Image 1 (cartoon, rainbow, N blue to C red):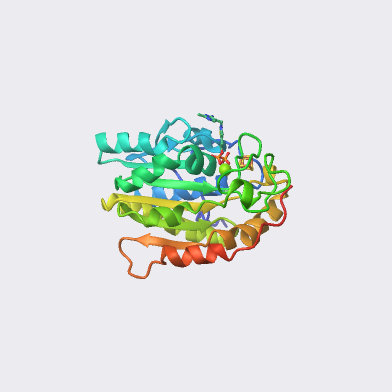
Image 2 (cartoon, rainbow, N blue to C red):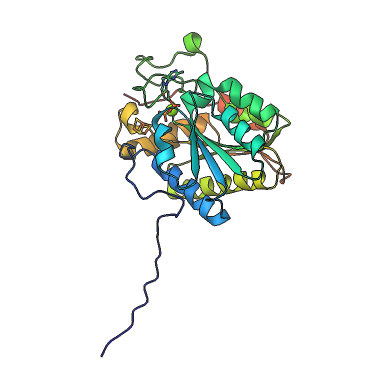
Length: 275
Ligand SMILES: Cc1ncc(C[n+]2csc(CCOP(=O)(O)OP(=O)(O)O)c2C)c(N)n1
Ligand code: SF4
Ligand SMILES: [Mg+2]
């Protein structure tokens, strides 16, 4: 007697994600975030109307990993390239994918002015507290006490200042419509990251202004940790310095205030761990 077994897929790769192996290190959460961006593009039906702008850093090859159109920008200039694409073709959904060295160092000016102008673009900002691609130098996001190739004794506040809180800064700007910070250190937080990215794309679809999601991410290779240790380090060391939440939402009254987030960041202790 034959039986008919219906195969119901419970887990499939998103159609917006290219069917290729990525170059990311084991335990690097760039990969998980790529998947989430692709899932949201699938859900909102954006694959044929989205343009992603890849930046410079470990995610420079992002143009190989998505099925939507992709463009490559010079270091830190992704918001300017995105502005050009969006202004010429306003019907498209334009997003950038930038690391913290790219966005919060060489590109700080670019992203602030894109927010000030209220550009209707979406920025995916990967904060892994380090320059990953170039071998682990300190970034503006590096934690106080964190050891990197250029801060071998730990970042010293009196020498190199404090970690930059870009989301809090941008949320104060009138042109910013949706600003959130999320994390990738466990499945629940990956789910919140997905919700925030979806909300950011919807902000653009509804023409409300600039949107950005800052995502706390791992770099086990340059932190000198195993993948599991790196996830723990995000939770225990990064989250207290970079409070998670929605800092601005054009639709919600109850968005967390940047001032409250700033106070939480101030009370954070110096980082432990790192190589
Ligand atoms: C104009 C310019 N200056 C410097 C560099 C060297 N560079 C390449 S990637 C990078 C930092 C990347 O760090 P981040 O943006 O944090 O990305 P990650 O690799 O950590 O994901 C730097 C300084 C460059 N490519 N171009
Ligand atoms: S060097 Fe760091 S950021 Fe780059 S792919 Fe490896 S783990 Fe990820
Ligand atoms: Mg980085």
